[in-house]
Image 1 (tube, helix red, strand yellow):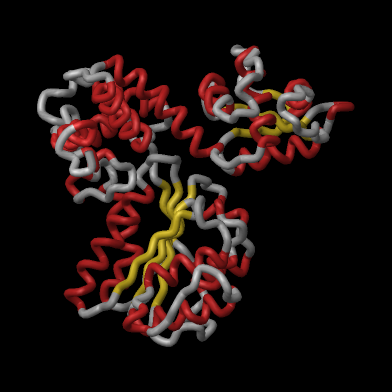
Image 2 (image 1 turned 180 degrees about the horizontal axis):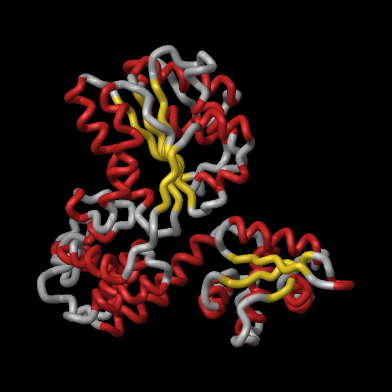
Length: 417
């Protein structure tokens, strides 16, 4: 029935009208939500440090460039977004036009794409008369339009480059940090907040960039179990009253504390536990839902990391997962060992891929180290074996790695053992 009053459409109308039995404000569990300051736990000193760096911006002066380090889920992006949002709001009282832009460098990896993203975010085409097409212009022209937008619209612009180590090169840092000195900008001051999971990030920068950045550096420590518990308790109103059993938040916090104090993981587990309870028509979110949600969160996270990766990379990671599963008493495996298992996998005609050389397979593994899918250590041999040997290890449980890779149809029929 097209009028939607009876038949199947009628039942859908009944469904849309029903109240969610588990969640009341589910958005509070969204990883990307920037909550009010009273919901930001355990980051008071970090907030003050970042605010101190950019403080001149609220009066139209040049902010300090800032580098923030810390493991995933330690509040780096949250604090940067919160502080810059607050600065933007306060700057109005000082008659300062402060622009802010956020770029996720895991999604926007090239210099040109970053400039396009920034220009589109900060542009008001009705005011500037400037258009920023997605393609069709040279990088230099995109920069010219970007500089014009900044001078036309803002006294200060603060740019957050999240997971900056994922960029293909660091030229954008040079351009942004030297824009005023190089005469690209006439009146707008630019400040950079660069965020990285890798404390060694600056080692990859050349001296020209380091000289022009003149940055302040802050390291965000992992959350402890008590802080994670408080973070989740402060968002308990995401759920309806009485639906969380007493052990749900402490167990979720304990699991996340085991994962290096990852608040993202904690909220993921809590949200997934609620969804599992809802899908199962349960009236209460229980410890069992939390335990199942932890596994689901692991799979979701790893699936995002591996999304779009070529079959060759999946084959090399899969080989490492098989070794880790077969040798549970060991964590690290030499390139040679992984390659032998990799050869067995790629010899399966069902995959239909060539077997790369050991060196090329090792390059694939190194790519995954860069993407935080794998870990790597180096060992120097002695005597006749005095060369350097790379050892690789998983950053996720082998069962999770295999579950994700088996979702690829090419790997679905492979024997896990």
